[in-house]
Image (cartoon, rainbow, N blue to C red; front, side, top):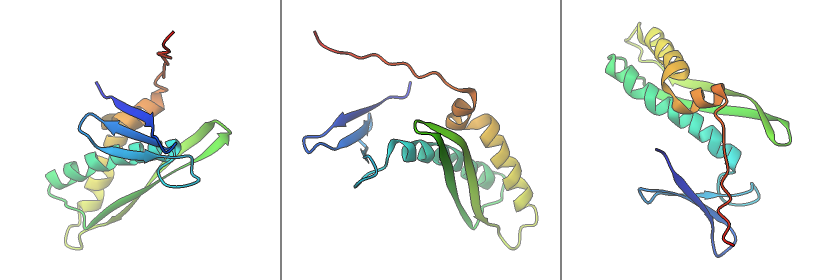
Length: 134
């Protein structure tokens, strides 16, 4: 089970916390912190990159540089259109198979191994429990 807690701070901002004690500032885009949409894009990119990197290296093809940009546009005020992951890689000059291995791993991770990408693609349901005290 994955779980985070998001709460309003005394200063009126918001903090997301995980069970390991890590925190991320969540904002509206007017100040500090990541917006919820940016965090969704971070989740897609993070899920892909932390899986692609070790699998590529495990196959003996450590990339010189591995980065990505994750983009999405709002197609409605409260709905994102397609999310696009664009890799920025530098292949080792002395490894002619690195590109082939990287591309195969990246595709496999996207379609089969990244929980976040797969969940978005399949339209995972999001429920709500209000938890109001009466």
